[in-house]
Image (cartoon, rainbow, N blue to C red):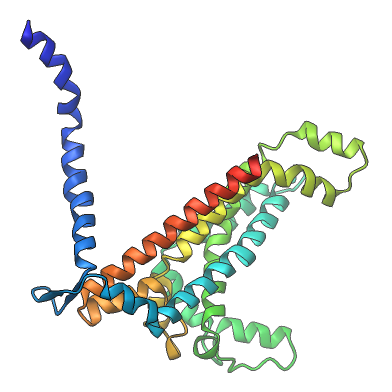
Length: 293
């Protein structure tokens, strides 16, 4: 009788035990180790010294960390205020029912997001070249007086990174907006048309409130992705670029951990970045609840 009652009670634990073991071994244990590591100053993989919160104190006054944080914030602002409006504009255009070749255009704009980041960085390193780069040559043909030696990767690093990211991710975010637009109640739009609302008024008062949840999600996704930027500038610039103009938080973490060997300081950077991203997520959630109420 006892065997019959115990067997059903413990059966679910036997099924979830492999997942729990893997989760603890590869997620919980490394997280706890990283917390301990962030309070140490390391000299390579075998030598370390416990410094408690000194890594975080130094981090708050580290000029290179401040620069990397500023660069990352500028890139994130470009993603939110330039990339997302372009994605929404494309989605509005491709959502028109009378547009011919809608499926073809959707595929064309979405395809860049399927390309690897390393390939994109190598391609744009050629596009931004002086004298022979495609962008400078095209602008020289279109705009009289444009300098063929315009220094994209020497003086305008962040603008180059934002342009490369826009080419890659505009179509990706466009898909989210398209899905949201196709779920907007047509009855509300038709009612607004009957009331005499023009296209802009219909967009502001009907379409935009209807797609706001998806818009909030895309903004959060863009912010989280921007603050984890690493591969694109690392390959495109070969590092932080001239005067560290392309240095990002994750790249600085990589340099501290693997170039200088101070894994403790790198772990402190990682935890501060994690707390920052959690704050973004919580803030976005709070704003969303405020708007709903």
